[in-house]
Picture 1 (cartoon, helix red, strand yellow):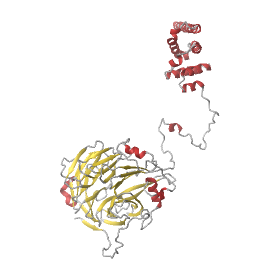
Picture 2 (picture 1 turned 180 degrees about the vertical axis):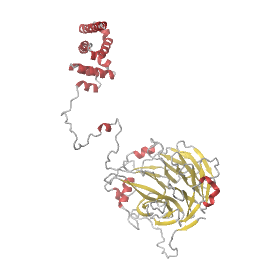
Picture 3 (picture 1 turned 120 degrees about the vertical axis):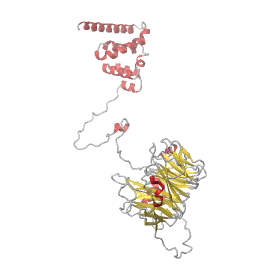
Picture 4 (picture 1 turned 60 degrees about the vertical axis):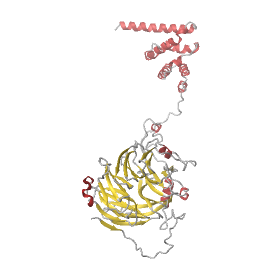
Length: 586
């Protein structure tokens, strides 16, 4: 039997004046300074400077972060945004974004070179802030039916989409193809959640039922389990799996409905199917208002395995879903219905002297009044308190943040989506890992390191030696001048080094050609003098062949050059004769 737990509520018979019943409009200061308690200036400064979610009074102070980057995604059609959701990274550094609006789901950032990632990577200027509009990378069609919700699988390859026609479509993110379609009715599907195994899906809709579908099943019309009990629309769903084997319940499903109740279901043994369907409802929690959103938070209380947060109307309630106890009721500063309830992470490491990253959780709520509110969260007691609020220009229907806490997307009634990326820290950070081999930083590492005690100090030689003239000519690709400068030094090792370098650069022909009588004489004399030296013979034999090939057709025009070629022939002949004589002794 399901147990009904009613949260404590105040009496409705108390007298209220007509003035107290009027809807109070937001004043300029009530957005950032609450009526029940002032906002935390540190929290306001963080979200203002890092994400651009705030006014000028916090942005004009001394900045700790660079200018946050923002992109506005225009509406594809005259349709509101039903949901925005970030998926896990799929082959890219940043996660993709899915925007559920109209008869399709638009995907952004599915590739590293997508226009969405490039726009968020640009440094904003005065002319580009608020004007960066990009087109989607691809769109997933829903057969002409209005898409209402979507959810990525944990590997990011599949996307489940719920439509107004009662369909649950399983789509491939990379190919945009619809792999499977599950249909159990004609009423809209409002919420979809993936099981951790990636094979089952929990979907809730306007018929007041939540269904679990199996991707491997061949029957697309019959779900594995149908969870019936709500008397109105199932607006939101949540799944929880107990990692510890000592717990009584290993896997629970929570469904929130417009009948102002939250039902907790035992979905531990899905494969048993419909046989135990009547015993799966563990408890019924009464929120007191139509439930719009559910959120699960980790617990540090040993008596509470997980915290369940429910949002309905303008209030939030904190539950223990196992025993159904309501631990807290929080009245927010929203004036209209809360549409989103989600955890966001705040990272602080710039102010820490040890540069250690500290993560703290916040509860973010959005409403149709266009207000974003950030609340503190205590995992030990389940206590929440208002910290900061920011007014958005339009009614907010959905908000999401990626797992790293770097990007936040805000969907509105007008169809626009505002994506904001936190700015990097202005304070310089030390390199935490060695530079990649072959880069400029790799060869400059340790250049500014201070000496320690006991280190040997190597004295410098004083002035830096100047680069030689033939090296300078080689750097400027003046090969003929480099050879002439080397010959002018009258050092055979320098000449041979330049000839070898010209050979590696394939510049020997360019250096030896186009020479007159005066320029040809030094290289011929050098070849004649050192061709019989064992260290230089291998190289100078090739040089002699090059000279004969280039200047063999112009013999007889210069007596000096003809005489040098004759000496080269005699020198080579004498060396060959000497080598033959030595071979006879062997």
